[in-house]
Image (cartoon, rainbow, N blue to C red; front, side, top):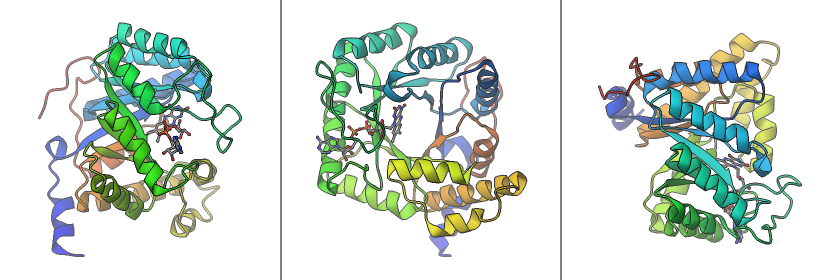
Length: 308
Ligand code: FAD
């Protein structure tokens, strides 16, 4: 281990050094709602820079995303970012959602194209009266309100990507349209992320590229999701979870170790801003944030988060 490596991860001094954000999905049932809110209450005192709420495939969670975001605004001091896709929807319908977010007090949207209704891997066809590209959606969001707009990024390329040039051009178009932050698809091999950031910077794109970190709560579940999203699952990761299918306690410890190892290696490489795919579960993410030097500052749920 080089001296620089030792220095960075051990010099972490909490919220002044590290920034985190958390992604949740809108709950389907009363029980899932309770789990989500228990997670939000546990993670909120870590003072995330924002928390985002996903938008179900094809807009299937439109109402639930809205009500979750609205409740975050009403009951906490967290800054919510509402995800929005434009797949299978007219511009008019999408604009209505944007306006309703604005009216509810939302000031940050994660703007996405979305996946075709037929599933990932099917050819994407824009709605005849809809936004043709995500960049067009970003531009409209910026016109409708003074929103902060985040977009997606793919360190291993999107499954539909014909080349790295197109991949980077698509990101550049979104930035030119007004996006100020990108959040990556999850990845397990940090080299993918670091090389991707090199490519993005070489193309003159200077917005923050937040690494999307997913704790492996279920190796099987993550592997099948990764296959659809174009994220690779390294053999070493499979090996770490081998034989643990019926051993949830060990699996959880291994998942925490794997994620901590990943984020600390990113810290050693100069990364200070992380986005966590929480899957609405707090414990693992809380532990990883603790490893990153973050500590609870009580009062975030009901009061303003006061900088340490
Ligand atoms: P874009 O960024 O517009 O394009 C994705 C890729 O398609 C490009 O990188 C490029 O490779 C290719 N491409 C695009 N345009 C062209 C073109 N003209 N020519 C050639 N190739 C092209 N999905 C949901 O349904 N709800 C969510 O809440 C949600 N949240 C997400 C959050 C994050 C951080 C990420 C990374 C993904 C999320 N997704 C979500 C998944 C996303 O909708 C899918 O990955 C979808 O297939 C692409 O949407 P996008 O906005 O990334 O597309």
